[in-house]
Amino acid sequence: MRHNRYLIAIVAALGLIPIVLDTTIVTVALTSIRDDLHTDINTAQWIVTGFFLANAAVVAVGGYLASRFGRKRIFIVGLTIFTIGSLLCAVSPGIGWLIAFRVVQGIGGGMLLPIGAALAFDQFPQEQRARASALIAIPILFAPVFGPILGGYLTDTFDWHSIFIVNLPVGIIAILLALLILPSDSAADNSTGQFDYVGLGLSTLGIIAILYGLKLVATTNPDTVTAVNPGGDLYGWGYWPVWALIGGGAVALIIFAFYSLRISRDPALDLRQFARRDFLVSNLISWTAALITFGLLVLLPLYLEAIHLPNLSALDTGIAMAPLGAGTLIGTIVATALYRAVGPRWVVFGGAAISIATAWLLTQTIHATADGRQILASVQTHAAIPATAGAADVRWPLLLLGIGFAMIALSVQTLALEALKGEALAKASSLVLSTKFIFSSVGVAILTTVLIDNTRSQATSLLAQLQAATDQGAGALNPSNPALAPILRAIETQIGAQAGTAAIQTIFWLIFFGSFILLAMSLLLPGRNRPMAASETPAEETVPATVG
Picture 1 (cartoon, rainbow, N blue to C red):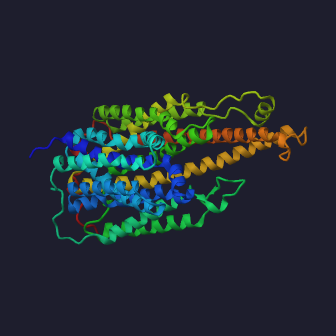
Picture 2 (picture 1 turned 60 degrees about the vertical axis):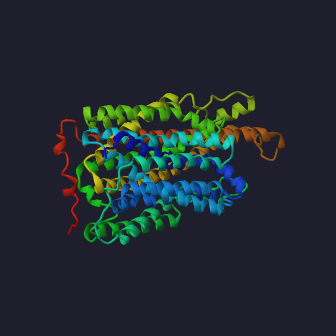
Picture 3 (picture 1 turned 120 degrees about the vertical axis):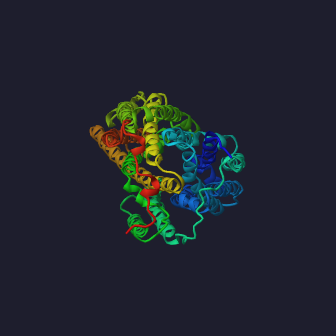
């Protein structure tokens, strides 16, 4: 039977939409969930953390499971588990049940992510795989932007249960279409080789430990929450369990690497793919991009919701981020059109150049607008302080940033996977996604701690300036004077806004300089003149059954 390759790619993308949306859609509903289920913020955070850890752990082995049992079968099983998990989340009677069912969702979603890419890629000849990459990239790249919009709208219009119910019709339709349209399980491995329990255990344990350690870095320590510090302090990099988890996970992955390269005949994650130059360089660029840019998708909404004055609602913040999604779509179209014409080197080079220009533009747009003396003078004289940059000010830079990010992401994903097929393609897709999960988490942890540290440093500096400005009038800002309470609250609000804005500006400077690294790395990629037939050794020869 002849299958339409575009229909297969669309079905694969449709199956991914609710999974990737659920990575961000829930975050805007956490406050509503916490209040309704009467729980604290750290317990509520496990609604996100549980899904993320389960998702990342299963992504690492999704390709292996597909090679053993068939991609169509595992894709449908994953969709079914995710859809049932969504229904159970919607009717959860308590926070413990909700966290458990979010883990179920994560397990189902983790099966789908690597298989969706493999299903789409395998239907296209090598010279057309940028098109398949574009179809799969759309839901993955759009989720961080449109998830908060959808989550905010559903939560405000209905309640938090609706963010899970919305998955049900999409999941059911995707399952039916997968049954009808996806090709049969010809990719299933009919060999009688031993199932790789050791590799599955080591890779899963290592990835979960590292990711949870990185999550702890940006998690609030409940022991530091007080009346004068209601937000508490982060555990940070000095918290010993962070390094115990990261170190233990690293040891597990090192043992796994030795086992998979020297012992296993059918490893869960095929590390031999890194012997291919294009696969290695593509992943190095992908990891670098994740390190320097992924945290922005977390921190920019935080800036709009909690730092910028006035604070935006979750829905308004999602709408403000929409230009990033539009830029992502434009960048995907541009990269798809240019990938084969000019080669991945110049598409990534162009994307990095756009990121450099846009990051610099954002450093000039988002910046503090008052020092300590100006803050004091404004609240005492009721003068207005110039507003920090808001949604309207960052609209065009976000559009450009989305274009640059998409050009980089689509090109390196296509290059990493375009020479593979069958079992090797599914396993390589798992390897790409699982390692990107790790580096994205590292980037979020680093940028979050940079933001917190810089905000505190800037606030301390502003307070010192205020103190210097009031030295000539001792007692002018005496906290015990009830008449000064409104002035003190206004000063505190402005210090938070100005310090946080200066810290966000620092983040954009880091992206600015990091994008130069991406620019240099892009020159390691092949140009369009490389003959495709000679671009890679055939996958079947590149990945022998055993090594050593």
